[in-house]
Length: 332
Image (cartoon, rainbow, N blue to C red; front, side, top):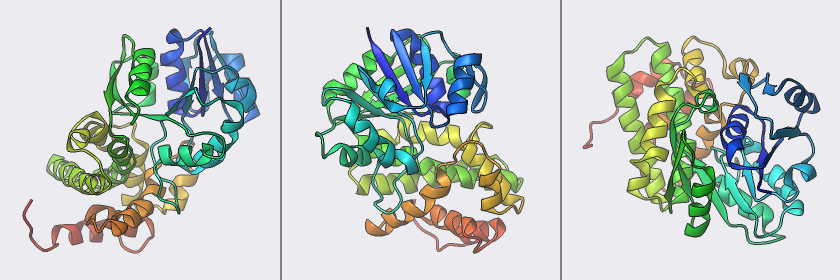
């Protein structure tokens, strides 16, 4: 019996449970809320985060970790980054060192500024040295759940682990490429959300294609500078986990972070916007963490800096745009 544990029943966790169900005998999906678990198991869909997408019969939801993790061949973490350490610390007592661990969380841990794979390693260190793979790429949950084609990256320092997950996860509509640069993948995944907020601001201000193209290009430059300073590889940032994910999140109507930026451009306060959303927009918390990392590595990130000022209420979107355009002239 092949068993997959999906820890996190938001839209992305639910979509992954749906698309990966044909590759496993059983899929266990963990949610914190007992009422959500009951609703999923009764109606066979996640009416809160992914309404209208039916879960296969071999997917079962639970609100306690032990039954989800029992005898799991692969544990796939899809919780928001701010909960990652606490949840993975709880996971450690129920899995063995040979269990394959995959993180599909996109963000940075506030305070420590660790990438999520590093958070997992730290959380499990008291019990064993974890080997972790990172799943990332240009994907919207609803499109994946509907069976539309998607291509992603599975990245790990352990080439054997990456290749194993690639074989297990890949299917007719879900294609994985292996990658040996988790630092580049995770920095690209986290920081594209910051640039997507800026893309939403541009859209909310009524700016056209010229501005969005410039933003994506210069945003990629910022992300790449930081990723390279942290050991990331150029090919990673030019690929699915870098440019691909950035383009999708900055242009797609389903982007949560782009939505946040568009609402900011309307004059709404960030607290009000976040409170109105069912799902987490990781870029809101990632922006400050990204700037701390940039300062640590002496990397310039002017777009992220202006987004942080907007989020803090220190300037208007119009003022931030003007300051970006009037910066001192430079080489590309």
